[in-house]
Amino acid sequence: MFKRLLSRTVKALAPAIVLFGSTVFAEDPSLAANASAIDLVQQHLDLAWVLIAAVLVFLMQPGFALVEAGLTRAKNVVNIMFKNLMDFSIGTITYWMFGYGIMFGASLLGFVGGDLFFGSGIGLGEGLGIGSLLFQTMFAATAATIVSGAMAERTNFKAYVLYTIFITGFIYPVVGHWIWGGGWLAQMGFSDFAGSTVVHSVGGWAALVGAIILGPRLGKYNKAGESQAIPGHNIAYVAIGVFLLWAGWFGFNAGSELAADMSIAMIAVTTNLAAAAGAITATAITWIFFKKPDLSMALNGALAGLVGITAGCAAVSPVAAVVIGVVAGVLVVSSVLFIDKVLKIDDPVGAVSVHAICGVWGTAAVGLFALDGGLFYGGGASLLAVQVTGIVAVMIWTIVTSFIVFKTTDALLGLRVSKEEELKGLDICEHGMEGYAGFQVFANE
Picture 1: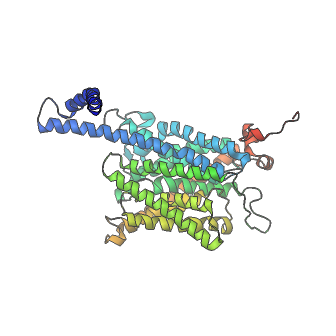
Picture 2: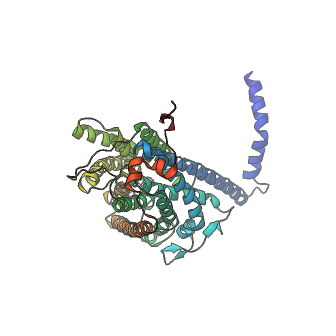
Picture 3: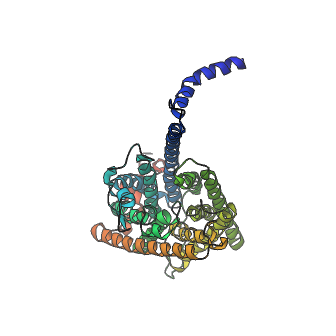
C-alpha cells in the first residue's frame, strides 16, 4: 500500500521536479549559468516571503482596531472601526500616489525622494519590485492607525480622514526617506531595522500632538484635576487584538529583512522574547504596586516590548532582547501613569506610551546593545550619539508638522465634535448606526 502511494506521489510531482531541475540546472552546464538560475529562484523566494510578511503586517490592522475599540466605550465602537478602515484605505491610495516616491525615490539633498510617484518606475522583474510597494504600504498604514487610539471618542470623522492623508502622504514618508531611503540619517549610520522610530515614534508623537490639541474626554478629569477612570467596554477585544498584533509583528520585523534567508529566524526569536518580557514585567509591576495584576497594562506591556525590539531585532542578542523588553515594560506602565495623572493628557489606549516612549527606548537601545557597534559591546558611544540625533530630529519633525496639520484641520473642519455629540456617542451622531444594535428597545415591544 505504501509503495503504491509513494509511486503515485512521485508520478504526480514529476513535472514539478523536471521544471525545477530545468530552471536551476540550465541546459548550459556552466557554473555561471547555474548560478544565475539559482539566483533567480532566490529572488522568487525573497519576493514570496515579503508578500507573506505583508499579509502578516496587514493582520495588525484588525489588531489595532480591536485594541482601540475594546479600550473605549460601546457608543463609539463603529467610529473606531471606521477610522481604522479609512486609515488603511486612504493610506493605501495616498502612499501609492505620493508616499512611496517621497520615501524611496531618488534623493533630493537627502531630505525627500523625487520620483516613483503613482508607482511609476517600479520594476516588475527587478528584485522585489512592485512587492516592495505593497510591503511598505502596510507600514505607512500602521503609522497612521496609531494616532486614532489617542484621539478616540471625541474626534470629528472628516477631520481625522483629512489628517490621515497628510501622515501617510508626507509626514511619515519624509522620515522614512531620512532613514530607509538613503537620506541624511542613513548616511550618518542611523540604525532602525524595522521602524521603532520610522513607524512607531512617528505615530506616537503625532498621537501626542492630537491628544493635546483635542483636550481630554468629558468627565476624564474632575474639577480638582484628578483623573477619573473611563473603562473600555470589552477587554476581550483588547486581548484578541494584542495577539493579532503580536502575530503580525513577526511579518513586521522578520519581513524587514526583505529576503528569505537564515536571519529571519533569529529576528523572530528576539521579537518574541521582547514581547514576552514586556508583558511579564508590566504584570509584575501592577501586581506589586496595585496589589492585583492589571490585564490592560500587561497587554500594553507586550506591545511595548514589541515596539522596543523593532529597531534592533536584527542587531541584538536574545539576552539583550529580553532586557529591552523588560525596560519597555517598566516604561509603558510608568509613562501611562505619568501622562494621565501628571501631564493630564487623555490617551484612552496608551498609544503615546507604547509607541512614542518605547519607540525612543528601542531606538536608543540599538546604540547600547548592538552586537556590532553597541556601547556595551565595545563599540563606543558613536552609534548611540547617532541614534539620539535621529530620535530628536524625528520627534521635532513629527511634532511640528503634526501641529500644523491638526491646527489647520481644526480651522477648516473643526477637530473636535460637539459636547452633545460626545455625550450621545459618535456612532449615532456621525454614522447613524450602533455597534450593538441588538440591544435597542423599540416602542412596540
